[in-house]
Length: 80
Image 1 (cartoon, helix red, strand yellow):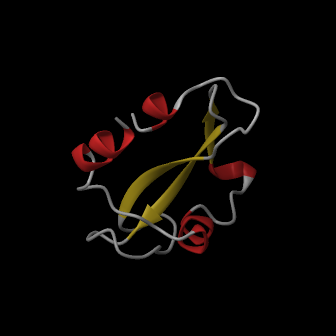
Image 2 (tube, helix red, strand yellow; image 1 turned 120 degrees about the vertical axis):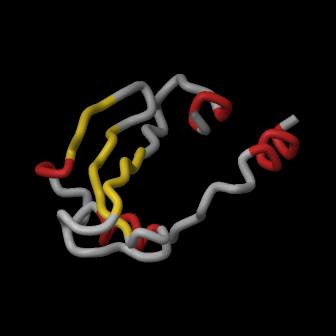
Image 3 (tube, helix red, strand yellow; image 1 turned 180 degrees about the horizontal axis):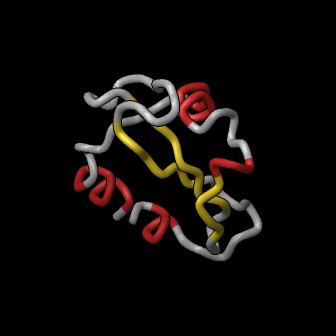
């Protein structure tokens, strides 16, 4: 079932942790948008084509979820 779900979402881009860290300015508190059952959600910025982090306030604004390992949410909800 999970492999079928991943195929359905195959158009998603994958980023390295370093890309996400740079895009969110090292997950700074000022970049925090909110918290959920998964963990925190941070605001970040990526190039228009979605390939690399850029200077804050430029490019595409993105939301980056961080996983709370103690959370009770499942894999399916994480993909949403």
